[in-house]
Structure formats: C-alpha cells, structure tokens
Image 1 (cartoon, rainbow, N blue to C red):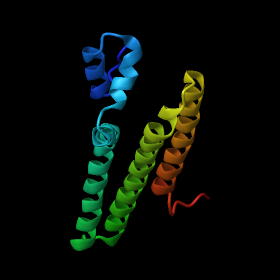
Image 2 (cartoon, one colour):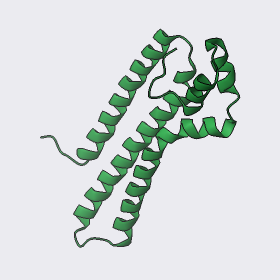
Image 3 (cartoon, rainbow, N blue to C red):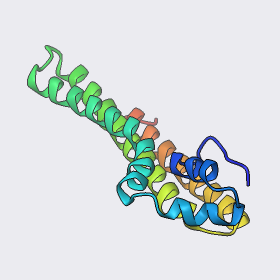
Image 4 (cartoon, one colour):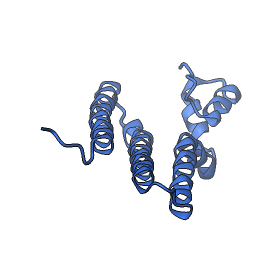
Amino acid sequence: MTLSAKTPHWMEHAAEEVTQPEKIQERAKEAPQSARLAAHLTPLIPYVLAGLLIGAGILFVEWKPLREPALADKIQRYLRGGLGIIGVLALTQGIDIFVISRVRNAVSRFNLRRVLRLIVGLLVAFIAISVLFVGARIN
C-alpha cells in the first residue's frame, strides 16, 4: 500500500501503528468521525474564502456606489460571474470528495472525474462568456 499526498493523516498514523497491512484499514476506521469530516472539508476552505472575498467586493460596490454607473454595473457583473465560477468549482470539489472518491473501481473513478471536469469546463466557459459579452451587439 502506497500513501499519496492526499492520504488522510489518520491513515498514515494507522499504517505506522499497525505492522500487518490487512489491519491498516480497520485501524483507520477507528479514527474519530469529526477528524474524517474535517479532513474531507479542508480542500473546500479556499473556495469559501474566495467566495467571502468576492461577496465582500459585491457588498462594497453596492455600499459605495461609483460615480460612473456603467463601470459599477460592469464591476458587479464581473464579481457575480467570479462568484458563480467559484461556486461551480466548490461544488465540483464537493462532488469529487463526497461522491466520486467513494467509488471503488479506479477506472470508473477516473472516467467520472474526466466527465465532471468536462462539464465544469463547459459551465465555467458559459459563465465567463455570459459575463464578458452581456449586452454586446453583433452587427
């Protein structure tokens, strides 16, 4: 059994404490539930922080309106688009952590991640194009 960088710390401790490889999984299951949940939620922290930062930017632009309403609308549109993209990425990370990682078959996991990344790429492109070209006129 090889331990990757994404292996939770309780799995590493179980591997250090137990001499028989068959008992590592059993020992790791004895880890407290709160420690497992915290380890799963750790990759979502940057998305939450970025969402809070962008949300604060949206509130700031609404609280202190700029002199040029067109510029304020553009800034708000970009911030909302960024918030949408962050939301899609956070949802993707959550699906990867809580759904795809539980699939036992490595080939199925790989293919599910590929499909998920394709869908996310299309959604991010759609959001970016919608934000950038809203109100654009094609002659």
